[in-house]
Length: 80
Image (cartoon, rainbow, N blue to C red):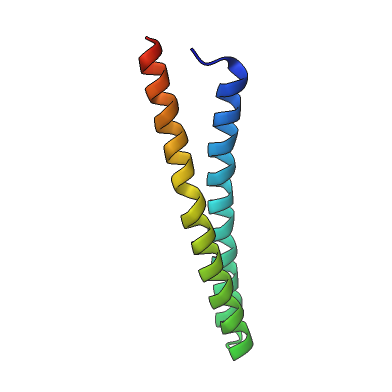
């Protein structure tokens, strides 16, 4: 059985990763609007770099949340 601190840590890690993903999507959207307002190569390069970097960073970190959730579900079902 999981104690309360472990449950809170799991919830915070999932919420934090999802919050970072939502924040990254919002920033990419804001950069896209900024680029479309006055399209120049510098702005387009900045948007492309940030978008690709954010995607790679989120793609790398999000499967961890799924693994943690499935591991905790498996351990809870084993305890029952």
